[in-house]
Length: 177
Image 1: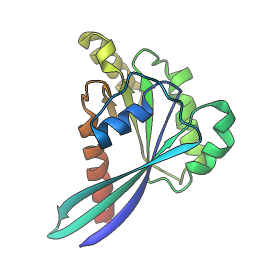
Image 2: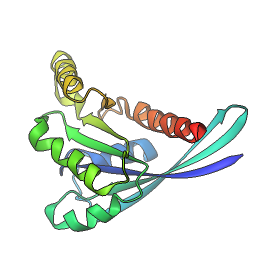
Image 3: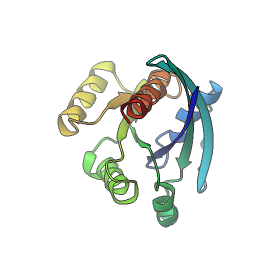
């Protein structure tokens, strides 16, 4: 069996639900109370897979990184050596110029070259399904080569899909090397 550890960074503006997403996935719970992340919190996820007749044990170390301005300098260090970055945005704050582009710029400036990233539009439970689909379609037109998920940490919608996709993506990347 092969064992791999991969670093996943979780970034986005304050209050978008970064911590709620990882808590929902790792603990299956959701809290309505808001606790600001200070610096960085860490979560470990184990995924097992069978690829080309060999077992792969994939350890995902998720870095839940604070978004406040006073953490900007340290955040750039946290993004170093990332294998994948999750950019979380709030469904009610989707303007690319203000709430997505700065994070993509941060990823490109501070993570390894060509570090993959995905966009997660969180809080899908707060918007009408038709409006949500339209918002996702608009984002897909702008970010053609980027995987985009919608989710609700509150209801759990698509949370498993996000981490299953990440595990499959990274395992396929390992397999190609």
